[in-house]
Length: 299
Image 1 (cartoon, rainbow, N blue to C red):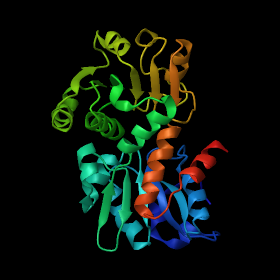
Image 2 (image 1 turned 45 degrees about the horizontal axis):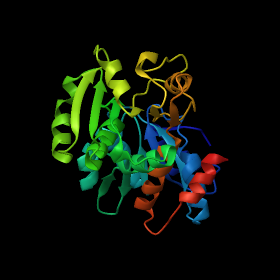
Image 3 (image 1 turned 90 degrees about the vertical axis):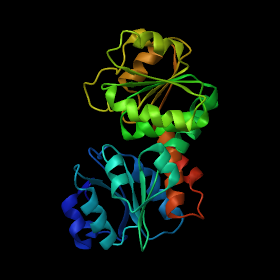
Image 4 (image 1 turned 90 degrees about the horizontal axis):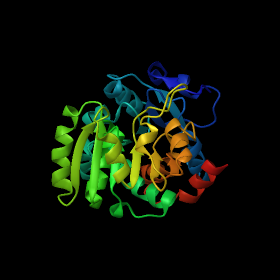
């Protein structure tokens, strides 16, 4: 079985299932997607629940989502997880989008029902659980700076922070113009949250970081070999909580730099776990795969 399938592999079951005992019926779609640990999480849960299905990775390019969904429906897929850069395109492609996903502004979980393609978002609620797991602190008590707020995961996490009523939320992005609609949406979702949008080149970036309790990276910086930290050491201090949504590598340049400053750090495995549990329950509502998935990630 290939580590990664492609758009062309969605043409037939023969291409997807050659030599396999179970049919591919769930997937994570993205670009890149080879690094995704989602199969490691979901396959043990499927096997434990005695569900006759394989969970695979599929690499898709922007612009291919609508046709890919059509092919997946024709092949009898149950659903898929959606990662970078397809969360907005997936949302636009779904027939129905859950109100929570509408509030969060992106879709990361899709279910192919007989009549409709339905979209959900588990990034936001999964993130609340992940922060509690990683740092044993409730999200609503923390002043937060969010790096890469313009992407799908960034917008979902920002919206969840506003819904949780965090006191202060600083949004950082390369283009601040891109954040204007998000800032307006956050004001409606969490009127008690102070929201500010700045660029990575803002001279006040360091001071905003140092005044925050929790630093969150939702950019892809740190994913590729040779990447440097998304922010400099001057933005980090002892006592900071630093969360990188990247989980491979386990210690990103940002986390390594934060650890050198005696900050508390965690990577995105806990987010992967909790959003994965919630996604699985959208596909199979009566299941509770948390302990199986946690064990799979730890092994």
